[in-house]
Length: 425
Ligand SMILES: Cc1ncc(COP(=O)(O)O)c(C=O)c1O
Image 1 (cartoon, rainbow, N blue to C red):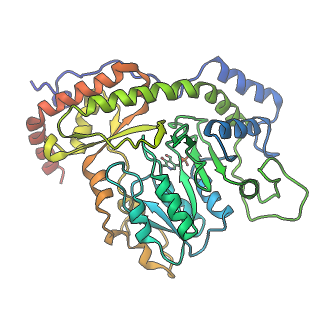
Image 2: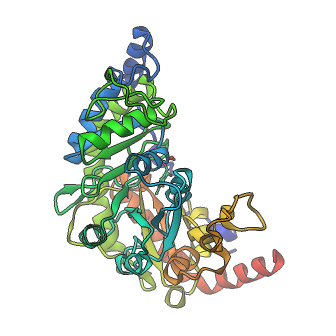
Image 3: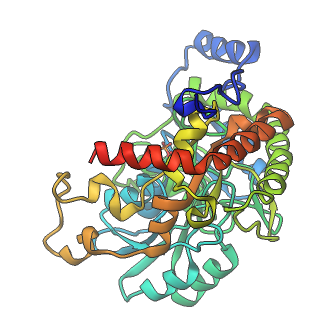
């Protein structure tokens, strides 16, 4: 019998990982208090829990005016709309990210222009971004992907030289710092998700950090059905200045949960950061595994998932086969997102996406070549779940043991995978 779990052998890890989300009596008490208060919803905006969350989250990141809203997708759409980015404008987006980073500009009426990523950290490559700038470019949306941050020095330099709005997609980066500055406080906006898997969660939710009180007032107005809001987004005011808006408010129940989550956050972040350093060190000893560059300007590392690269020609297997084998070994891992131009939404034969007549050239996704994103998404990337990093050194040791085991049996697994793939062609 094979030693590999995927071929019927024993698993490397059989015990469960620490659960997410973490909760205790404090969460129950916080929700109960909101229920008793009778103020369950998000109107009038912001309610007491939402206002406290906005203040405490801005303190955690060390700046900005926070506007709490429904999720980490509308945050980006609202940011663009608050900055006046809209119909026909181009917004530069990295090709390695979740679909929301590209769909948010479309929801605002703008065109996402996909650019390649830096192979060393899988985040937006500022050189590729500069090449993509045209007279129509209005904004750039770096994504702090996995356990890295995009090169914010180079991106802010581009923004200054070309007069661009910067919306940082920080869905993975609550608590991360670049040269001591919080993710989301460096650009004009920082967009955070609190969806159920994220490291600060309310089940669903989002927070937008805005650089100025005026931008925050516009963002608050857009999410509160267009009602005029005070500078900073702190509440409705008596004014005639309505904006086009919708209801993207977050409920008080959800905000109360996030406030309890914030109490736990610093200890969880420290634990993940320490275990990520141990993971870097341990992975770097395995041939055919590439640890992504840890930029020294990333002064506090905080992350949602940890990404490393398989070098298929050295390791002996492609990342999808490694991930399937690791999962069978009991390790929480996955291959992650497809390259953005390969997302099903952008495949004409699969999608009902209405391509605007005015700009059809931007939507020829099937003709695009973005080699670094393709290599990363289709051959190399392995995403490790954050629960691994809340399991102490054992969590890391199990990943390493499983990976070494898979590599020892690479030849046997390679044959099995080739047979399986040819049978399922
Ligand atoms: C990089 C990135 N951006 C944006 C989002 C969107 O966040 P939400 O699910 O809260 O809309 C996600 C969520 O998975 C994400 O991973």
